[in-house]
Length: 245
Image (cartoon, rainbow, N blue to C red; front, side, top):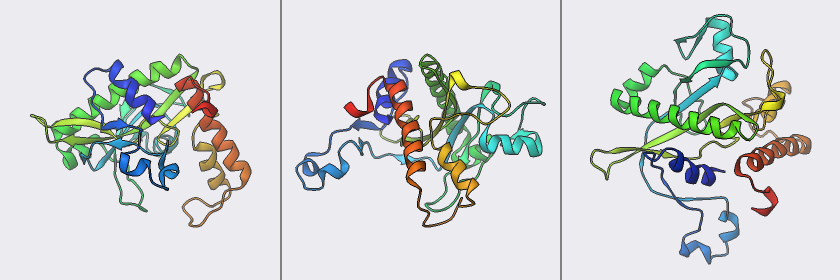
């Protein structure tokens, strides 16, 4: 799915650059016994300097944003309208960055001002503008295919080979791992939504009091239900059968 978006987004936003090169394996790996492990599970990309923040765009109030809002009336410290309901669409999408924690640590929600302190105001402004542009383009594309993109996470890097250095979209993009995908025909304000992402797994972990614990084994039913949502999101957005890919 990342490969799909990395190919589509620059056609919608011609000024957008990405790190994606190809899904093909390098020749040194393609002929090795390990090739099946990596085929269709990895990308060749350009090596760039990744910014140490995660760039989250929220079009609807849900998840950790809803938790903060119910407790403090803010989202990442940003004032938002009063009397919002859970899963309600925001008037304008919000850029709500977080720290990019080391492996095994938890990202921390931060304000746009704090993000500017970390990466510099000019780069923070560019990341914010690109993030909102990408979200808006993807949101409109997905809406035509019956999917609401409630929120999503992007990562960006600096290409120091250009003059001036350019901000480039990297990592994965608009997958069920990094986004909340809701079925538009089942959307209803005031409650959590029927999703096509990892929320089913999150909810199971919370319900079973396993969230954050090591060595958790998922029951087959949780694996199947989560996987079914991923496949449906892929087929709706990409327009191809999962089995044929």
